[in-house]
Amino acid sequence: MEIDKETLTQRVLEALDSIRPYLQSDGGDIIFVGITDDLQVKVRLKGACDGCPMSIQTLKGGVEMVVKQKVPEILEVIAV
Image (tube, rainbow, N blue to C red):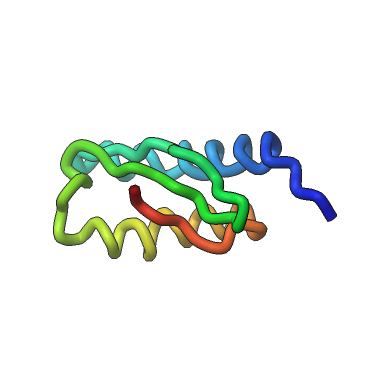
């Protein structure tokens, strides 16, 4: 079955928007970069999240968990 990247992208953006307020409340934010052919979501952390020692935990335990919950086709979220 072919995956519609446009629909997938829209669903990922909605998932990211749902967690953005939590990142912004700590002075950070997240930027969607793209989806790879092997269904990895690429994001860029900004503000306080960029370079924060807890950013990997935030990315994997927060962002990735929410994205995979809302968009089960996604295999991983990675920071670039």
